[in-house]
Length: 230
Image (cartoon, rainbow, N blue to C red; front, top):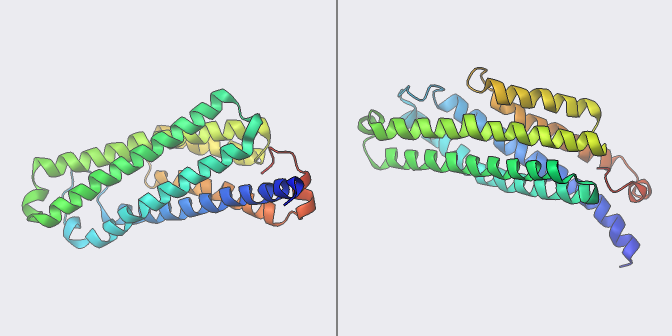
Protein backbone atom coordinates (compact mmCIF):
# COMPACT_ATOMS: atom_id res chain seq x y z
CA UNK A 1 0.00 0.00 0.00
CA UNK A 2 1.31 3.45 -0.92
CA UNK A 3 2.32 5.82 1.92
CA UNK A 4 -0.32 8.33 0.81
CA UNK A 5 -3.06 5.71 1.00
CA UNK A 6 -1.84 4.53 4.40
CA UNK A 7 -1.87 8.09 5.74
CA UNK A 8 -5.37 8.71 4.44
CA UNK A 9 -6.58 5.45 5.98
CA UNK A 10 -5.09 6.40 9.36
CA UNK A 11 -6.79 9.79 9.26
CA UNK A 12 -10.10 8.07 8.65
CA UNK A 13 -9.84 5.24 11.18
CA UNK A 14 -8.22 6.98 14.15
CA UNK A 15 -11.00 9.55 14.82
CA UNK A 16 -13.68 6.92 14.30
CA UNK A 17 -11.88 4.60 16.70
CA UNK A 18 -11.82 7.41 19.26
CA UNK A 19 -15.52 8.05 18.75
CA UNK A 20 -16.52 4.39 18.99
CA UNK A 21 -14.39 3.89 22.11
CA UNK A 22 -15.85 7.01 23.72
CA UNK A 23 -19.41 5.95 22.92
CA UNK A 24 -18.82 2.46 24.29
CA UNK A 25 -17.29 3.86 27.48
CA UNK A 26 -20.14 6.32 27.96
CA UNK A 27 -22.90 3.77 27.46
CA UNK A 28 -21.33 1.18 29.75
CA UNK A 29 -20.54 3.68 32.50
CA UNK A 30 -24.02 5.24 32.34
CA UNK A 31 -25.62 1.80 32.66
CA UNK A 32 -23.36 0.92 35.60
CA UNK A 33 -23.95 4.20 37.43
CA UNK A 34 -27.71 4.05 36.92
CA UNK A 35 -27.90 0.44 38.15
CA UNK A 36 -25.84 1.26 41.23
CA UNK A 37 -27.76 4.47 41.91
CA UNK A 38 -31.18 2.79 41.83
CA UNK A 39 -30.01 -0.31 43.74
CA UNK A 40 -27.84 1.07 46.56
CA UNK A 41 -28.85 3.76 49.08
CA UNK A 42 -27.04 7.04 48.46
CA UNK A 43 -26.23 7.33 52.16
CA UNK A 44 -23.35 4.93 52.96
CA UNK A 45 -24.61 4.59 56.53
CA UNK A 46 -28.04 3.36 55.38
CA UNK A 47 -28.12 -0.43 55.72
CA UNK A 48 -31.47 -1.18 54.13
CA UNK A 49 -32.30 -4.45 52.39
CA UNK A 50 -30.39 -3.77 49.17
CA UNK A 51 -27.81 -6.62 49.48
CA UNK A 52 -30.53 -9.26 49.28
CA UNK A 53 -32.81 -7.46 46.83
CA UNK A 54 -30.39 -5.89 44.33
CA UNK A 55 -27.24 -7.99 44.24
CA UNK A 56 -27.86 -9.15 40.66
CA UNK A 57 -28.12 -5.57 39.37
CA UNK A 58 -25.03 -4.56 41.32
CA UNK A 59 -23.04 -7.53 40.01
CA UNK A 60 -24.02 -6.60 36.46
CA UNK A 61 -22.93 -3.00 37.04
CA UNK A 62 -19.58 -4.08 38.52
CA UNK A 63 -18.94 -6.52 35.66
CA UNK A 64 -19.54 -3.77 33.08
CA UNK A 65 -17.05 -1.35 34.67
CA UNK A 66 -13.84 -3.13 33.51
CA UNK A 67 -15.04 -3.00 29.89
CA UNK A 68 -15.91 0.67 30.31
CA UNK A 69 -12.40 1.27 31.63
CA UNK A 70 -10.79 -0.51 28.68
CA UNK A 71 -12.82 1.59 26.24
CA UNK A 72 -11.87 4.78 28.09
CA UNK A 73 -8.18 3.86 27.98
CA UNK A 74 -8.46 3.35 24.22
CA UNK A 75 -10.29 6.67 23.93
CA UNK A 76 -7.42 8.46 25.70
CA UNK A 77 -4.83 6.80 23.46
CA UNK A 78 -6.43 7.62 20.13
CA UNK A 79 -7.20 11.22 21.12
CA UNK A 80 -3.55 11.77 22.12
CA UNK A 81 -2.44 10.13 18.88
CA UNK A 82 -4.71 12.43 16.92
CA UNK A 83 -3.33 15.54 18.61
CA UNK A 84 0.20 14.49 17.66
CA UNK A 85 2.76 17.31 17.56
CA UNK A 86 0.10 19.88 18.47
CA UNK A 87 -0.29 18.41 21.93
CA UNK A 88 0.66 20.86 24.68
CA UNK A 89 2.98 19.11 27.14
CA UNK A 90 1.55 20.74 30.26
CA UNK A 91 -2.11 20.06 29.55
CA UNK A 92 -1.32 16.72 27.91
CA UNK A 93 0.33 15.57 31.15
CA UNK A 94 -2.71 16.64 33.17
CA UNK A 95 -4.99 15.05 30.54
CA UNK A 96 -3.22 11.70 30.68
CA UNK A 97 -2.59 11.72 34.44
CA UNK A 98 -6.15 12.61 35.40
CA UNK A 99 -7.55 10.03 32.98
CA UNK A 100 -5.37 7.25 34.40
CA UNK A 101 -6.13 8.30 37.99
CA UNK A 102 -9.85 8.26 37.20
CA UNK A 103 -9.52 4.73 35.86
CA UNK A 104 -7.48 3.56 38.86
CA UNK A 105 -10.04 4.96 41.30
CA UNK A 106 -12.96 3.59 39.28
CA UNK A 107 -11.45 0.11 39.39
CA UNK A 108 -10.53 0.46 43.08
CA UNK A 109 -14.07 1.39 44.09
CA UNK A 110 -15.47 -1.44 41.97
CA UNK A 111 -13.05 -3.91 43.56
CA UNK A 112 -13.99 -2.85 47.09
CA UNK A 113 -17.69 -3.01 46.23
CA UNK A 114 -17.24 -6.42 44.59
CA UNK A 115 -15.39 -7.73 47.63
CA UNK A 116 -18.15 -6.43 49.89
CA UNK A 117 -20.84 -8.11 47.78
CA UNK A 118 -18.90 -11.39 47.78
CA UNK A 119 -18.50 -11.23 51.56
CA UNK A 120 -22.19 -10.56 52.02
CA UNK A 121 -22.98 -13.56 49.85
CA UNK A 122 -20.59 -15.88 51.69
CA UNK A 123 -21.87 -14.97 55.16
CA UNK A 124 -25.15 -14.03 56.73
CA UNK A 125 -26.07 -10.75 54.99
CA UNK A 126 -28.18 -9.45 57.87
CA UNK A 127 -25.46 -10.05 60.44
CA UNK A 128 -22.67 -8.60 58.30
CA UNK A 129 -24.67 -5.56 57.17
CA UNK A 130 -24.65 -4.26 60.72
CA UNK A 131 -20.92 -4.78 61.27
CA UNK A 132 -18.08 -2.28 61.12
CA UNK A 133 -16.65 -4.12 58.09
CA UNK A 134 -19.80 -3.37 56.12
CA UNK A 135 -19.84 0.31 57.03
CA UNK A 136 -16.13 0.66 56.27
CA UNK A 137 -16.52 -0.97 52.84
CA UNK A 138 -19.55 1.15 51.97
CA UNK A 139 -17.89 4.38 53.10
CA UNK A 140 -14.65 3.55 51.28
CA UNK A 141 -16.45 2.76 48.03
CA UNK A 142 -18.49 5.96 48.28
CA UNK A 143 -15.45 8.16 48.96
CA UNK A 144 -13.29 6.68 46.19
CA UNK A 145 -15.99 6.79 43.53
CA UNK A 146 -18.00 9.90 44.35
CA UNK A 147 -15.24 12.16 45.67
CA UNK A 148 -11.85 11.26 44.21
CA UNK A 149 -12.75 9.51 40.94
CA UNK A 150 -15.31 12.12 39.92
CA UNK A 151 -12.97 14.99 40.79
CA UNK A 152 -10.34 13.42 38.55
CA UNK A 153 -13.01 13.17 35.87
CA UNK A 154 -13.58 16.91 36.27
CA UNK A 155 -9.85 17.60 35.89
CA UNK A 156 -9.80 15.36 32.80
CA UNK A 157 -12.64 17.37 31.30
CA UNK A 158 -10.93 20.70 31.99
CA UNK A 159 -7.64 19.58 30.40
CA UNK A 160 -9.48 18.08 27.42
CA UNK A 161 -11.46 21.27 26.87
CA UNK A 162 -8.30 23.38 27.12
CA UNK A 163 -6.57 21.22 24.50
CA UNK A 164 -9.69 21.45 22.34
CA UNK A 165 -9.76 25.25 22.56
CA UNK A 166 -6.06 25.51 21.68
CA UNK A 167 -6.19 23.10 18.74
CA UNK A 168 -9.75 23.58 17.50
CA UNK A 169 -10.59 19.87 17.54
CA UNK A 170 -14.03 20.53 19.06
CA UNK A 171 -16.64 23.28 18.65
CA UNK A 172 -16.10 26.07 21.15
CA UNK A 173 -19.56 25.67 22.69
CA UNK A 174 -18.79 22.04 23.44
CA UNK A 175 -15.59 23.02 25.22
CA UNK A 176 -17.41 25.69 27.24
CA UNK A 177 -20.06 23.15 28.20
CA UNK A 178 -17.26 20.83 29.32
CA UNK A 179 -15.86 23.54 31.60
CA UNK A 180 -19.27 24.08 33.21
CA UNK A 181 -19.87 20.36 33.76
CA UNK A 182 -16.32 19.92 35.10
CA UNK A 183 -16.89 22.64 37.70
CA UNK A 184 -20.16 20.93 38.59
CA UNK A 185 -18.32 17.68 39.21
CA UNK A 186 -15.59 19.36 41.21
CA UNK A 187 -17.87 21.39 43.46
CA UNK A 188 -21.17 19.55 43.85
CA UNK A 189 -20.40 15.85 44.35
CA UNK A 190 -22.64 14.61 47.15
CA UNK A 191 -24.93 17.63 46.87
CA UNK A 192 -26.60 17.12 43.48
CA UNK A 193 -28.16 13.70 42.76
CA UNK A 194 -27.03 11.99 39.56
CA UNK A 195 -24.28 14.57 38.96
CA UNK A 196 -21.79 11.76 38.25
CA UNK A 197 -23.61 11.15 34.94
CA UNK A 198 -22.31 14.49 33.65
CA UNK A 199 -18.93 12.97 32.76
CA UNK A 200 -20.04 10.01 30.61
CA UNK A 201 -22.74 12.14 28.98
CA UNK A 202 -20.15 14.74 27.98
CA UNK A 203 -17.83 12.06 26.58
CA UNK A 204 -20.82 10.65 24.68
CA UNK A 205 -21.56 14.10 23.24
CA UNK A 206 -18.07 14.72 21.90
CA UNK A 207 -17.74 11.12 20.66
CA UNK A 208 -20.97 11.34 18.68
CA UNK A 209 -19.83 14.70 17.27
CA UNK A 210 -16.50 13.21 16.15
CA UNK A 211 -18.19 10.17 14.59
CA UNK A 212 -20.83 12.17 12.71
CA UNK A 213 -18.27 14.72 11.51
CA UNK A 214 -16.09 12.01 10.00
CA UNK A 215 -18.92 9.94 8.56
CA UNK A 216 -20.29 12.99 6.74
CA UNK A 217 -16.89 14.04 5.39
CA UNK A 218 -15.83 12.64 1.99
CA UNK A 219 -12.56 10.66 1.92
CA UNK A 220 -10.85 13.25 -0.26
CA UNK A 221 -11.69 16.05 2.17
CA UNK A 222 -10.62 13.95 5.15
CA UNK A 223 -7.19 13.24 3.67
CA UNK A 224 -6.61 16.96 3.18
CA UNK A 225 -7.57 18.05 6.69
CA UNK A 226 -4.87 19.30 9.11
CA UNK A 227 -3.60 16.69 11.50
CA UNK A 228 -5.31 18.30 14.50
CA UNK A 229 -8.84 18.05 13.07
CA UNK A 230 -10.95 15.20 14.41
